[in-house]
Length: 150
Image (cartoon, rainbow, N blue to C red):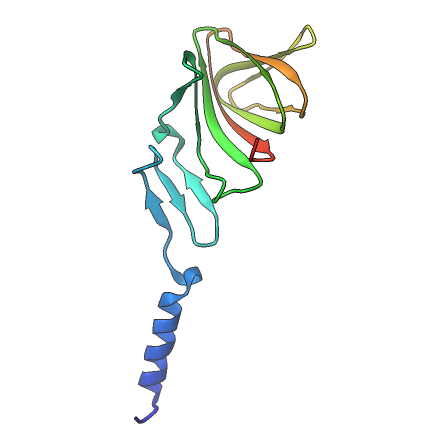
């Protein structure tokens, strides 16, 4: 076998095509119920308008969906939550949480006080807080939690 430039190029292209960092991002919507793109680098992108929220603990006024698995993001969890019809949802956090309000008004009641945010605002809730997620009418927000395996 004669080694020439064409053979070397062919071998290099084959090796590059088989390495994960050269593979194109994978899109999915099947099992997760929304459009998500996972790049081989680990970068993940979710089209929020496609996320189908599910009732939480049988409540139709509190709906949510995690958007990353523990395999995809083992340290930081993320999801979308929606409160409808003036929902009041009591919760004790066993993790730190950041909430980015996407639509409406989110209010956090804690120790007799209310801290709120409107679309575009960001709220932080420290681990160990006993709170009520509330809304006067409607709120949709993205949450991130640390650690992810709460």
